[in-house]
Length: 331
Image 1 (cartoon, rainbow, N blue to C red):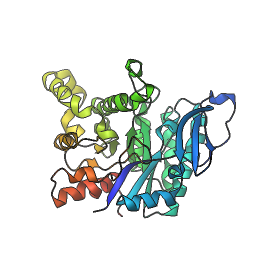
Image 2: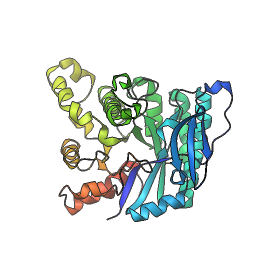
Image 3: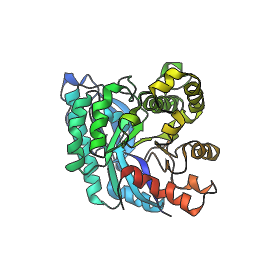
Image 4: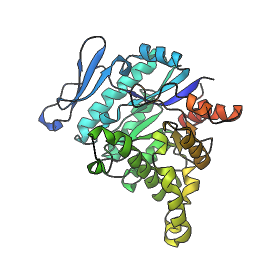
């Protein structure tokens, strides 16, 4: 059975010229080398070594065919979200990245779907950009960070953006970004991606629960990378607090019921953990995700589901059906 990969990333083959000192030395650029390789620099400093899989749809399709992926959902490399730039600069960059994603989709619309980016540090500006993202570029949703300049995405400050996303029927994919607690890391800084990303993603998911986001926007569809991070571990404690404290019951709906309305990818690298996520959130809420094309991801993103003893109907859910429902597309 072929799979839909909800979690894969794009870096455009080029970027607009740096707009000058107003970019605060944080503007991205791609320095191309030999053999289809390049270096992504942020403000002139190396951020990550890349190859043409990041921008070449043909090469992506070859890997998809090899790994039994029917549809790949493209989203920006999270570092490109650039909430730390002036909002006008983030909008300029977002339009460039969104256009690049749209171009890849047009090379094979039966194999790709796309999630764009917006200047979420200004929710009203971000909301106004959504119609362009959907109607002109054909994208099905938006990728957002697990925090926006340190503010949790469930903060009511972002409600205008989520209201418009719901109105336009665009889905939301939350990916870890500049996580909390990096000062507590003991060892190389790269450990943050393995230790802090899940923490920040779990806190982001919890913020949507405690803010009552889905009560305000009941048709909004939200998915989380990396299995929702630590949400499954902290959810029972949050549920217990809600059960014993009337103040919390008056503030937001029952946490476990709300958590079962979100979607979660299977990028957890452990069969027992994946079984726990299905038990916690339900088999109708899990999707496949690879983190393609990065080394910290997983190849053959459907395979982790094969080890769970699911029946044919359940496998159809996790391989394709749940992702199609989240994206609200029929392919």
